[in-house]
Amino acid sequence: MSDNTGGFNALANTADIHVDIEAFESDAKRKKTEQDELSLQIEAFLGSGGSINLIEPNVLGDPPKKPVSNYGSQPI
Image (cartoon, rainbow, N blue to C red; front, top):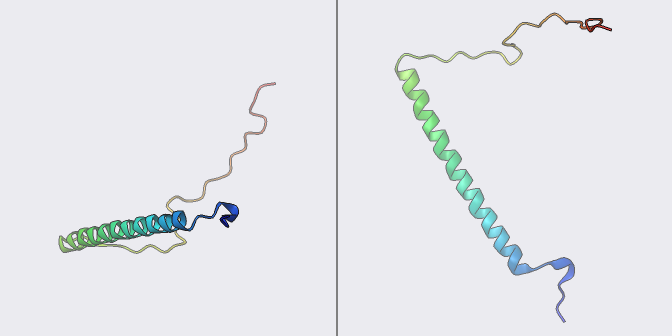
């Protein structure tokens, strides 16, 4: 009699972990490649005379808009 409680299968779980590790490593390599590419693009941009302006986190792109009331705008 096997003790297979809750459908636990050690071999299947090991395979799942192996797949997850491969996916993680693949994702990490992809992110590193994208970071390297972005760094090269930034260096090229700055090298050609471009500049980067830092904007405070609390600055909004659009000024606040005046609230609009639609009360009573529909015909009876």
